[in-house]
Image (cartoon, rainbow, N blue to C red; front, side, top):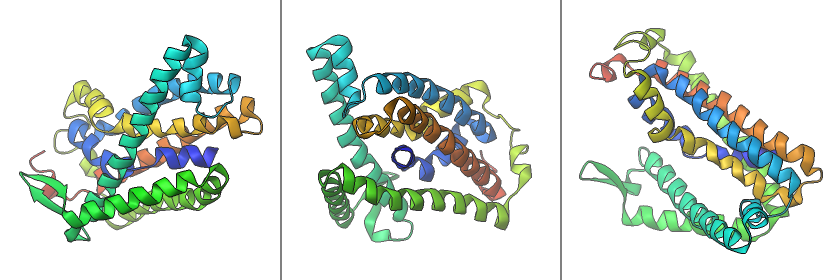
Length: 255
C-alpha cells in the first residue's frame, strides 16, 4: 500500500513542478513544498482515520455515502471517476510533452504552446489503453506490477537531482538574482496552488481505493498515507534544490 501511495503521488509533478514553482517563488519554492506537504498531510490524516474506520474499496465515495447518504455517495463517486479519468490524460500528455525534447515528432509548438502532433495523440491513446488494461486486470496483478513501476519511479527522480548536483550545482543561485524569495510571500503561496505542488501530492488517495484490500487497515492505511507523502516530500525537495542550483546563470538573468 505504501508503494501504491508513492507511485500515485510521483507523476508528472516531478518533471514540471520544480520549474513552475521556481518561476513563481524563486529559490523560496523549497518553502512552498513544505507548505504543500503540510496541507497534504492534513488531508491524509483525516482520510487515514476514515479509511481505517471504513476499510472498503472505493473509500473516496464510500465514506461520503456513510456520512451523507446515497446522494452524497453518488456525487462523490462520480467526482472521483471524472478526476481519475482526467488525471490519466493529464499525466500522459505531460509525459509526452516532456519526451518531445528527445522525440520531436511527438509535439509541435502552436501559438507559443506545446501541443501533441497526430503521432503524439496516437501514442497517447495507446498509453491510455495500456493503463486501462492494467487497471482492469485486477488488484492483485496491479499490485505486482506496481512494485516494479514504483521502484523505477523512485530511482529516476533521485538519480536525476543527484547527477545535477554533482555535475553543475551553483549555490549562488539561491542568493543572487533577487535573493532567496524574490517574489515574497505571494510567490511562495502562488507556487503551492498554481505551481503544481498541491497537484503533485494528491496521488496519495490511491491508498484509500485499496483500503478494502489491506490486511490490517487500522495500522496500514495511516502508515501508507502519511509515509508516502513524507517520502515524496524528500524527493520533491531534492529535485527542487537540484533544479535551482543547476540552472545556468544565463537563464536566470531576466528572472
